[in-house]
Image 1 (spheres, helix red, strand yellow):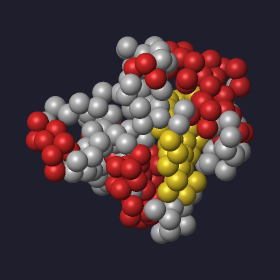
Image 2: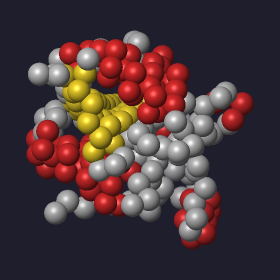
Image 3: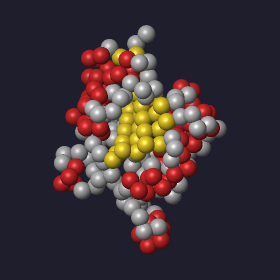
Image 4: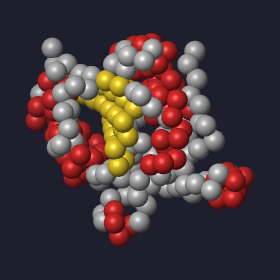
Length: 211
């Protein structure tokens, strides 16, 4: 049974079983070149890297993209991530002991330092970055970044090559009530391109090529 560790940080998986489900799905697919859009505190990233290392040793590559930004003015209409800890001990630890913001590029790189030769974390807007990098090399993409319709739509459009090369895209928060644009963008993308869409664990949307 796989374990999903929190590393004393925030994660979008309030129910750890969701994190375990994702890891199990990744283990079945055995990807070598992984992309995560929306790194946040790096918890999911670290768990995925541990899993990929257990399967492939050092023969894997992990790329992560995040804006690492909470300023509402800079985010525009995008939904700002909730970076506040509910546990007061964690607030004190990061403010007075670690003296670092866990939602920062430097903090995430520190968490992933064990795999620094395999990891590339890019700070910036995914819609812009995905237009500049070679996306067809990725065989598994996990999207949990910007939650507005336009952001998800553009992320998926920029990742079309992944599906065309028989890769997999898994989107988180498919049925998120306060961000209906996610579902709309995913449904439209799959329909427009005649891709197969399957909802997993009532949370994840898996997009693959229709056979």
